[in-house]
Amino acid sequence: MTRVIFNEERCKGCGLCIQFCPKSIMYLSEQRNRLGYNYAIIDDMAGCTGCAICALMCPEVIIEVVEEAAV
Image 1 (cartoon, one colour):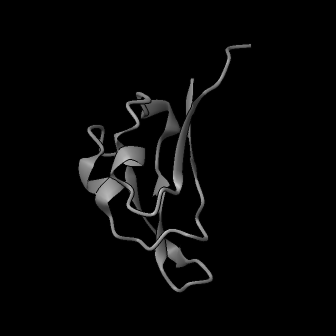
Image 2 (tube, rainbow, N blue to C red):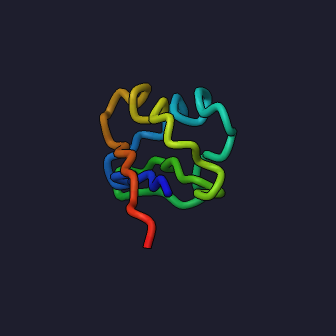
Image 3 (cartoon, one colour):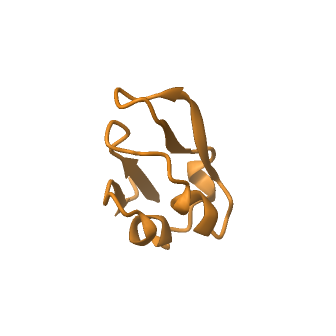
């Protein structure tokens, strides 16, 4: 299973990760981080394919895509 980890406190809400997600499972939170930005989150982690396009597109380099071992 793939897990996407955001450093929500550094996210500036540019939306590039959302725009380029092939599964359209990301959106901006209604909550704001300490910088005052609505940060990106994933709606349905089970729908993530682990393509890591979101991490590649992020200009702030705040997204990490990790593969979790099945238990």
